[in-house]
Image 1 (cartoon, rainbow, N blue to C red):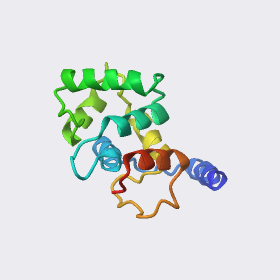
Image 2 (image 1 turned 135 degrees about the vertical axis):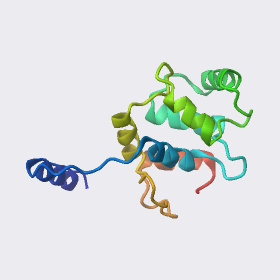
Image 3 (image 1 turned 90 degrees about the vertical axis):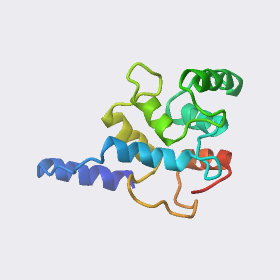
Length: 143
């Protein structure tokens, strides 16, 4: 409930209570584990496209994404299946790249994806947001 969250945040700020933020590594880990295929250990082009279009505002269509993805496979030396966990983290750390997110942006991204960094995911889709369901439906897997 957004109103309850806002009320709690207002109260905490008035009381000067600081809630510790998760580490950058744990945030990236939560995103990667949500998107990656258990079979290949990589994030497929199609899942990464839906994620990038939904959460990072990638402006192109799927055909444009495939060209972009193929270029990233070559540039960043990914497997043809996509980035593994290490390569995904490297991509997200590149400050000059299109996928870089500062720490505050990463926290917002994880919140928007309805992920809790460092916590196991709920095995049902009933608690997922519409955006999260879009990514999960495209991947065909739930981790």
